[in-house]
Image (tube, rainbow, N blue to C red; front, side, top):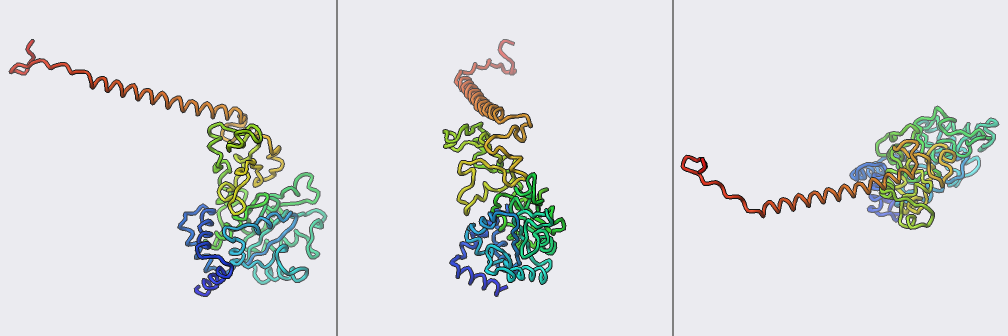
Amino acid sequence: MEERQSWLNEELERRGVTRREFAGFCGVMATVLALPKAAGARIAEAIQTREKPTLVWLEFQDCAGNTESFLRSGRPTVADIVLDTLSVDYHETIMAAAGHQAEEALAGVVRDKPGGYIAVVEGSIPTGANGAYCTIGGRSALDIAREVCEGAAATIAIGTCAAFGGLPAAAPNPTGALSVADAVPRAKNLINLPACPANAENLVGVIVYYLTFNRFPPTDRYRRPLFAYGKSIHDNCERRAHYDAGQYVEAWGDEGHRTGYCLYKMGCKGPVTFQNCPNVGWNSGTNWPIGCGHPCIGCAEPDFWDTMTPFYSHMAGFPGFGVHSSIDRVGLWATAGVAAAFATHGFVQLGKRYMHARAENNDSEPEEPAAPATSSGKGADE
């Protein structure tokens, strides 16, 4: 244990990462995982003491956007810390080896570490023409995926293409593209991290969760980890207060847009999209689409290019208000509700003032003298 901690401390020092920055990273991971801040200490201990898990990263029908997203992450130096915590034995984009040497590295992991590695799959898997649409080293993507994922401790399908098939699987789907779940039904502990591209913070979060608790996080019906996809973007959106007040952007660049009003009328799909973008942001937490004034397009949901289009038109209905409720009616009722709330508050305040004034008047009036009493205690008129 001491040797492992010494190795990590030396590596952090060599890369210019202070202990404070490392502790900050663990605190951020606790936040991403929706854990109390105190869990940061447990995360730090786990990263320091656990043996390096082996990771292999497969790329099939993809644009490499998820790889780019991961390599451009930071907070702080996520790539350095996590890649050094892991043993990335195969990744076509970043590995130095090529050709037969690279493929032998992958084959060696599958052969020598059955059930002892994590497989990350980026891109959909084509099955048409016996898999001829995507081949690596003379083998089809389908053949490679089944061999690697079925022997892994867990498989992480990163990005919407791997998680749900993505655009390659859209009709008419000439290559017969499938998601990892459909192409490799025997994949163990499959976790989907959809989005286009996926947020690197969530990938790191899954791995850190595994290192900390020696198991993978609970998931929803789409096999998405609940810590990242358990709430809708609408629930945590920084513009939610404007929605509740019935304040919407009506046109690009209008006063409401500049002020930060709700983007629902401009096509925002936040109410039906589940992801933690508002919490973790992008580019090391610098910003996120809605923060920049652009509506969410729902890229973490299945078939978003069909179900969420047109991207710049609002949905006909709104969850929670009935499928026939338009946003215009919702906005009208929200505005009316706010006005009614202020009116009610005003009436309450007026009532309080009236009662207070009446009480003061009663206090200022002289009390009537009591009737004189006789020795028997009865009134004089008796």
